[in-house]
Image (spheres, helix red, strand yellow):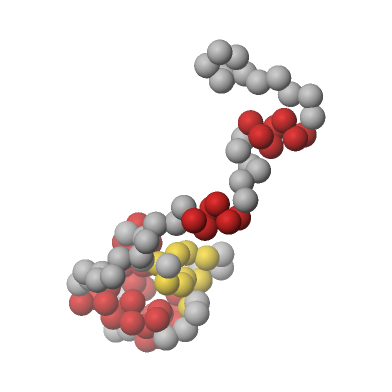
Length: 98
């Protein structure tokens, strides 16, 4: 217990507090990092970024229809953009700008 490896639990509330699940949504949004003003992208990334900017969210198949790259190339570019925090992957192979 001294090193927080064990906790006394008497109710569900104790579990919520130990796991830090009781955070307010306000505090979560305040912790978001500031978006970059100038994002440096290569030509392929910029093209996909511009396509995603047209709508709120887009399915990967729609991205493939709007850019002249193979689906495997688009997938790797989308993954790179996601790893850089520029886009967010949503359920159902949907993507949106971050």
